[in-house]
Length: 250
Image (cartoon, rainbow, N blue to C red; front, top):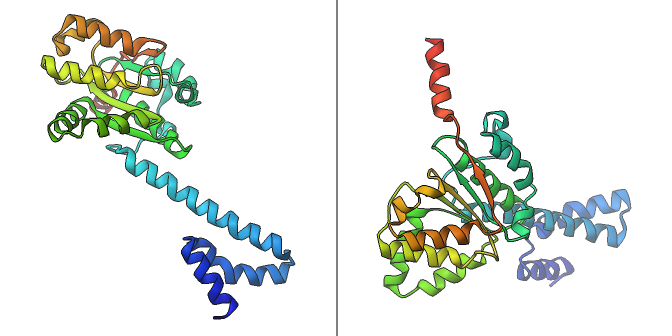
C-alpha cells in the first residue's frame, strides 16, 4: 500500500470526505503557491470544517420541523404591530436563548406572530442552536401518544434539551382537563431554564376559554410569563391588507 492509499484509508475511517476530495488538487496548489506542509494541512482542514458547518445548519433546520421557511429579512417590519416592531431587534440578537427567557406573542390572526417565530427559529438554527417547532394541538397529540406507548419520559428529555422550542397556535383548539394538565406539565419542564416562544390568538384574560380550568390556567400564565417577553401583536391582518390592495386594483 503506497502513501496515497494509506492516507485515503485514514480519511475514510475518520469520515473526512471533503478532506479526501480536496487532497490532490490542494497538493498541486500547495506546490505551485509554496504553502508549505502546515499551510496545505490548514487549508484542507478549513474546507472540511466549513463543509461540516454548512451541513450541520441544514440538518438543524430539517430537524426543527418548520412548516415553511421564513426569514427575518422577509418581514415588512413597518407593517408589524408597534410592540412587534419594538421587540424584534431585541429578540433577533438571540440573547433570550442564552438567558433561557421565553416570549409570548399574542394577538389576532395574521399579524406576523408565526412568521416572526419561525424566522427567529431559522436564525437560531443557522447560528448553531437546536430548535423544535410544533403547534400546540400537535404537541398534545405527541404527549398523548407517548403516554400511551410509555415513552413519555423520552419525549420530555428531548423537549427539555432543545435550546429553543416554538409552540404555535395556542387558543385555536380547546383542551379537556387532562390535556390542559399535560400541556402545563410539559411546558413547565422548560420554564426558567430554556427559551420557549408561544404564539396565541388570545389575550391572557381569555386563556380560560381553551384551558377550561381556572386554577390551571392561572398557573400556566404565571409560569409562561415569569421573566418572559410579552408582545402584543394585535393589529390589522396582513391578509386583510393584501385583500384591500387587490380590491383597489380591480
